[in-house]
Length: 322
Image (cartoon, rainbow, N blue to C red; front, side, top):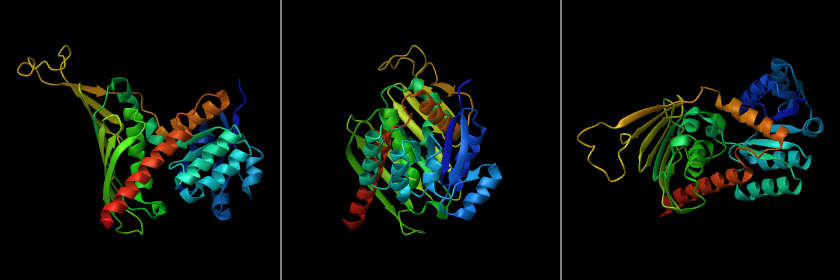
């Protein structure tokens, strides 16, 4: 039996606590401890999970081979680079950073120190997303809707970096796009100093078009994604983890309309085993660090999602001043 990976958690707010909960149950990981800038919170969480709270980050980094980082976005580059410089593998929560300059600093530090960097775009592990992958074939149009109740926790960044970036990453991932040719956006700040509601229209360089709508001022939670391709369309409920594929009947070819009066569309319920997406993400990180495989979401992919999110933010700013 292989030796469990010694790992730590940096930042134990609402997200970091979930990291800790899953890692404590992972037989391939050994949680050495945690660090948080709030000593009281650190000790309280450490007592809850029966692990050690470290007084400073360097002390934790000296005893682990990997960390997950769930600190405020503005501190991602500082904390992430500190870990990478200790040759400690890093899983950093999305967004990779708040600016492209900070993102590039993280990437260059990981390269310089030959250290593993993964970005926490957890929707990649969503049951519905995993179910549609085998059926995707040249998506042409995507439409996402992501709504959430207001929470003060996320207002250090605009809703584009807080919520919409999940969908922007999925759009890049599912279409295989490497760049964009047009980005339009609109949005407004309502309860916080930064954008709380936003819409974005994106045209990718290979012709696919996407529309994303996001709000953190909703009474209910909605996480839906629809995808259209020549053979049919997908409807994904990311909150429920369900996915459906509506397509032409088996045997009907593109351009063939003879079946229209004879058969209804074929409805396929797509399923994969129900598993917690965050647990899968953390397990993939531990497995990759231990086995030397590539991360599921690379630093470069995290940068690409951040780049697109910032382009949306710039488009919104330009629309408001036009």
